[in-house]
Length: 574
Image (cartoon, rainbow, N blue to C red; front, side):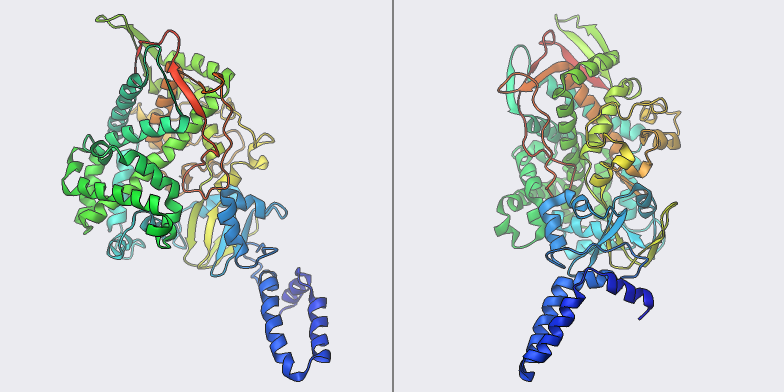
């Protein structure tokens, strides 16, 4: 044993004096026949309570430092992550303030990364750090794939059978192409904006008003509109409207279903909801309703069938995409609306700024006015709107970026010592912690600042490639991740980062900016009881995150047309 190891053992938070004294006392006071039993029991107790401290002392010094659980070794951190959800990484590291650290569980190590400068090299593509190694098991449990399907999905993930081979490569490349700035994305966004216009014009008119949960308002509109845009007029939610509520019943209880402990009994409601959705998606494939869907879905279904997925499993695969499309867009839009309407001054400033994106014309066939909002102008001429959107994303983006260490890997970054990641460990880049670091975002990191993303070097021409064909992809990527001065790109993690970034981010930006601006100009949204601005909801930090944060309590609001807008006809255009 080396001198450095002995030194670490000596300095470990272990009561060596107590243990040595106890052992000598047992030899002195106990009968010889009892010593063996005592030592066995004592060794077990000592290992359970001091085992993590012993592992920390014996750990390879090049690995991220291990933080032992002070009360319940090997199980404590697991319980903590379930109990505190996304906030656990900041809680457990509050005293030590390590940029990267290790948590020991019964079977493996979890490595928490809370420094953007270390997150950057980890999120780059590497043969030793696998994204799919973790996420595919989540997807299997999320939708209920069988093992035959998983074999098809896993085939050639490592590229052993050649580049650009296998279901994941072909399907993933197609989705990225369809959702990248260009004609396909523009066509899809146009359908979505038209559907929003239709639904919001019909939602309330004249002097009528609607009392509703703000979250339910967004859920109902987005679920129907997204399903129509992506999956066509014969989508499962159009044929079976009751599935809209069932989708959100499943979303609320999917963690319990994914735990897979007799879910038909222990998580009956979300399990039954998932079954109903999966049955409808199977019908969507078998009856070829997908042929009326967007080109992306038509291609996606055909790719899955061609690679050998059954119609049943091909349908289930769409639940993953549905969750990706709707599951994050809805809470993001909810928070965007809440952050604006709960702040009257900000609401008025955004109304004033975005008015320049509105074209007003008179309808020759009626007394009503037609007002058209240009989403392109919102992106390029409305910095406060875009900054508020991005600040909303920063404040609610808590989903960890996950990698599985498949081979020993060394992480290096300027100003930091090298860290060794050992095979079998799970790496979690803690987005919620990084998004709230004062060292990264400034002393007001814990507060909502709608002006945060406005600076002399950051303008809102960050989405222009969707409407400007002369913009290059490189320009789009650079400006789409524009940040306040001095903030590294890896610090803004709502859409992921590095080699794994959300392909739907451009579509989401168009639909959310358009929808929220339409609401800002069409409606007054106030507290149902007081008739005034509602309070900003409190975030539910203790939920295990599978999407952006939810509110602990949903505001109950009254929605009505603004004075002077009672009979106006509004339209969004790209």
